[in-house]
Image (tube, rainbow, N blue to C red):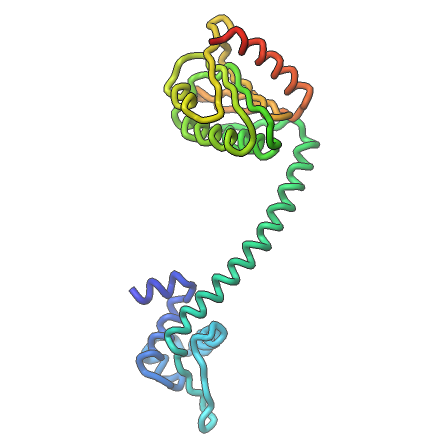
Length: 248
């Protein structure tokens, strides 16, 4: 158990063997440590230096010989706290990098107005990107929503909940009754209606802010086309409003 815990906090097997040997034999020169820990003589000083850097081993010089000694076991907790603080600082720096990358990605996205995403993962990426670019209060509408592949149902349920909670309201026009439609109805902040048969088409269109998503989410060919165009989004939104009025 001890070895597993020490490995989890970042010590190598060699470091663990040397440290636990020093715990048992006390202050020692390198020779007894090599024998106890079963470490190669060529590696022992490198390992001891790493443990010294971690604050888990110290040494004194007596009669021109180095004697190494394990730090008090409580030092392991100090070492872990220092790692935690280091990770916290890394997290803060990483957040700044992420924000910078997001800005650069958004600027690039503005230049690339049409992007094609393939496969189930591609469809997920397209919708998440559209939501990422949405502003608070944007309206998410979907029309010609077909029966979605079972592998995508949990994703769209979560996506819709998150959009309603963080961005704005959602309205959807479904092609046909389905378990997904029943589940979506229960989400707070969403309205759903069923299209008349004469208006149903197999490709769904979703509008989120200035983004239009034209997708095939059923069958073998999964694809989503993300179009960043405010005029097109407004045009599709008008079509949606007309169909919404005559649906039930």
